[in-house]
Length: 148
Image (tube, rainbow, N blue to C red; front, side, top):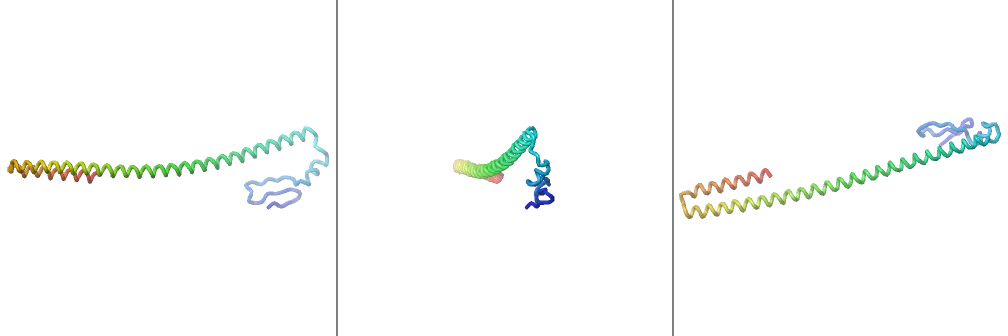
C-alpha cells in the first residue's frame, strides 16, 4: 500500500528498495508548467522504452530460471526413479545368479556323491576317502554360496 507524502509516492515498506518518484499531479509543477521540448520528449521516450525493455528482460529471465528449476527437478525425479528401478533389477539378477550358482553346486556335489557311491561299491577300501572328498566339496560350495 502506497502513501502520498509532499507530492511524492513512496513504495510500501515490503518493497525491496525505496524509489522516490513525483506524483502525477506534480509533474507540471516540476517542469514549470511548460510543454517539454522535442529533444527532451524524445529522450524521455527512449528512457521509457529502455526501462520497459529492461523490465521485460528481467521478467523473461525470471521465467526462464523458474522453468529451468522445474526442468531440473523433473530430471532429478526421473533419475531417482530410473536409479531405483535399476537397483531393483540388479537385485533380482543377483538373486537369480545366486540361485543358479547354488543349483550348479548342488548338481556337482550330487554327481561327486554318486561317483563316490560307485567307487565305494567297486572298491570298499577307498570309500572313506571318496566320501571325505564329497564332504569337502559340499563344504566348499556352502562357503562359496555364503560369501556370494
